[in-house]
Length: 206
Image (cartoon, rainbow, N blue to C red):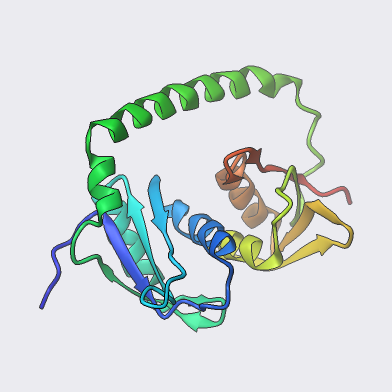
């Protein structure tokens, strides 16, 4: 039976050894490239192990995510993705009025943040000359190599992520050319791995 396309995708065959919070963060990092995510539901009950739901704001985002991430090796297991059969309670509630209020607040907050960051930009330290290695900072404590690899390997020319022992807040990402590094830098500049950490990306010092 074909399930009608909707805003929610259902993922199974997820590695169930991953802690719930890490799983949600990794799913967010992986799927937010397709559009705004409203909610990620991952439960650790026996019935729900190895499964997750990702709710997108736009239907097109859910469709793209389903097509492009089908079979993606997520924590060494190929993800199986389909549209959710029905919108879960969480989603139906969020479709209700209180969800809209939050969204409006969020939009307002985002607009304020964007103006603030636009105002701040001229004062930023000058970037190093373009090269194929990016330097990331302001990363959250729970950052790991897997999360960063998933985020950057969507860009052509990605080679590797290098974490710095003893420092969770910085990392290096290498690309095959400076042009490819520049594309990833522009696309992910200010990307929020968590709500409080906007990633800062510059070219690494040679």
